Image (cartoon, rainbow, N blue to C red):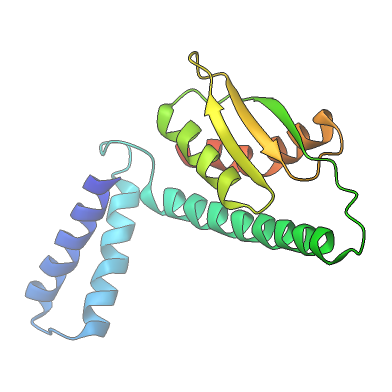
Length: 159
């Protein structure tokens, strides 16, 4: 991905030199032409086309923000109730992620959402140990994480 961005920027600067106009609009036009050339050369350059990776990262950020808002609303409901009747619990989350950075990213995203915290990761990196402030059922908790956060983390890491 970094090589593709570098090639795109070099082509943009080359465009400025060829046209002789050093304006931002001309740089933007050169960047678009460079983007087209990088797209055409994607078979030669390593990794997938970097705009797709950037799109997946933005999608991950949006999904995390949605999960963050939902978790904040849940925690506010627990805190504002006159009687505390939540059921905190520890559970083991089986993950299908293979790369260390994906597991760490997922663990950090889970910890950053209010009401959950990652306590540890198993030595074989197949299980994540989580504490939840309001536990419904293990299946619901696992499905919630798998269908949202783990899915988009996996998409970012695919090539």
